[in-house]
Image 1 (cartoon, chains in turn yellow, brown):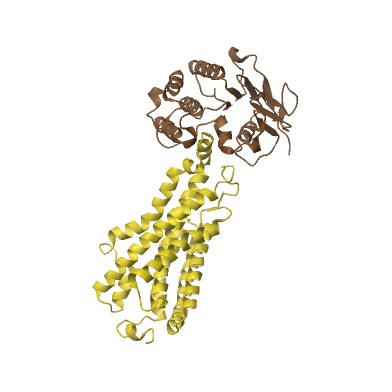
Image 2 (tube, rainbow over the protein chains, first blue to last red):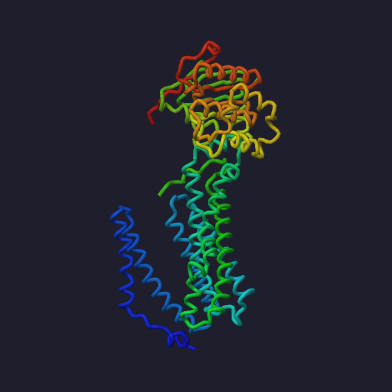
Length: 270
Length: 210
């Protein structure tokens, strides 16, 4: 069965002109950026460009992968996705410090593989685990969400240590371990990482129709089945984001302090 | 008896024991003076191992600083920073929090804490958000917190700033009592000292061009 065989016939076909039309939406962002001097226009245009190019490329890649049955290839793609996600966080973090790439990649990859593995092997149980129709899109959704979670967590915690450095040092000198001195910040960081997925879960179906479910319905899946898949996804996302945020904070509070329990010198605002 | 705190070969230090040297024994107060920006605060941070600063050789009761675990160091040396940083919550919450740190349990008991609190007349201010306290109130709260880990050496960074004459007297009583209990106090100041400490040794931190 070719990838477009089942879907294509009941879908409105989108052409390049339609894509050009929708890209005008981005001009709103650029205009706002100019008007309020957010200094984001280059980033915005780059983001728009990357969205288009990356998605198109992945479209080609997925078509090829779906056509062959190679578990190692699927695994390779998953690894690449994870590294890309971590690298994006590391490049966009509000503060820089030595070792942040490893923290980002580590915090995002372990929970993602765990949750995708759980979803594929224990919940969905397809005949062939390496069937790219399951693992790759699942990983994509898990990463999309845990990327935001880990990024928010990392920024919130490093910002707290950076901005409140005097207060943290004061507590360290009053007998606190780095863990004790930043306990409240660690909690706040994990909470902020979990906020987006919690919001999404609270409003799922009422305010928003989640992307995958919408996609499946557009593709002709009966809504009730699409809903079940969406529920599976939501819980996997919740697990991955929570684990990712927690892992990130646990890691950071070792990383940002040295053996003499002082804030590391390499922590700087970007 | 070994000095509670000893500094040798510090490039910016001058005083009664010759250049580069500072000796502070238990039950002693020493003053540290110097223009603003000369590095007084930096020296205190050095004594707490807060920066990767290695100027001078520092000994606590004869042991080199680097050989003392940071856990022990920050229990034995107490620090009163120039300003109390803006901690969240009220003074009472901060006190509770500091007492809950694992290292501080079973150190200063409720009665001892209460008598310091009384000396500093802090009770009426303990339920105010810390960021809303006045400079003098913050300083007195800071003085109270520094006693919780039961330090042997106290580093005071201009504790008299912002205190009215009556509070200034309370600060002197606080210091006299701490010294009676065996603490050694290094007091950074660039003001005239009160009669109570007229005979205390004075050290200077001098600016050195790099």
